[in-house]
Length: 436
Picture (tube, one colour):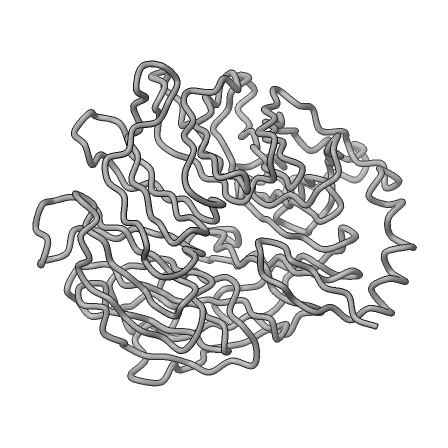
């Protein structure tokens, strides 16, 4: 017998006997049996359809705070005011909105604009400003690109464009990566890779041309770095499983270039030298219990200039890790029961002046973890059942100096949760070095 999971639309097999057994044992823990502080909801929006993508965008509502954009399985894009949860505008696209990206001010209205990629092969560029009646305004649309748009990112203006605007990067289900003009959606370059493109991300230049490069993770077990100016392949690496998630780290091998990190379906995190030639040079790898859903850099977590990598997996016993960025060695790991599907960093909530973590699970919970030791100190059990598909951290909304967290779920709910300060331990156990 084999179970299937289609989180984020990507069907993936799981090892059933152990996972079903662990699920039965661990589900009670997801209901608060560990005694964590309860998360408090500040506002909630019901989008009526599963939330498939969620991003933060710069202030669109002129209240001095960044706002939130959600894309749904029901073909909708919603812009939500972060301070109140009010819908700023919404727009009906032609398909499930798998991906979103903020692209800067394209239309000159002094507000950031939004890219949306759909399951009906289209990329939309929409104004951050509404039409005045609660609807979105399309600046341009690229229809019929040939396949689902699974992932979007942006890079800075490239020489063949020269208009000073950021460009859009789209990863397609037919194995193509497109660079689209931010101004009008014109194709600036196209690259063909080995298989369906699950994820794309930009990173700083590795070839001294000052133009961001493009990291690409695909089906068919392949990771790529493409030249952002031309789409030319700089290097690629064969893995043993589909590449679900990618990112970058500041230079760790003293060659002056950022490194690439990736998480795969072969239960592995990879760190690759950004300045590899033709074939990716592995700096380190780390084995996990299950598929790696997210890799997130945590700058300065171990001290100034000493970075870490947070890892979210589909594991049942252990699903979250913090790794030393320079070596890939594990600092801590923990299990939240049922697998972690989304992951974000927050400003200090544990009094050690360094970032902490928030995790969204397949069992409908949002959990706060101490970035220092993985201690689990708060939990919000979502009111409606559904995987937490997206998380973003927002600056303080309540005046307590702590980041808030916005979660988007498979149940269609977008919730803003209040940041929680980790309680101090009993006075007899407090060591000053622990908190300075």
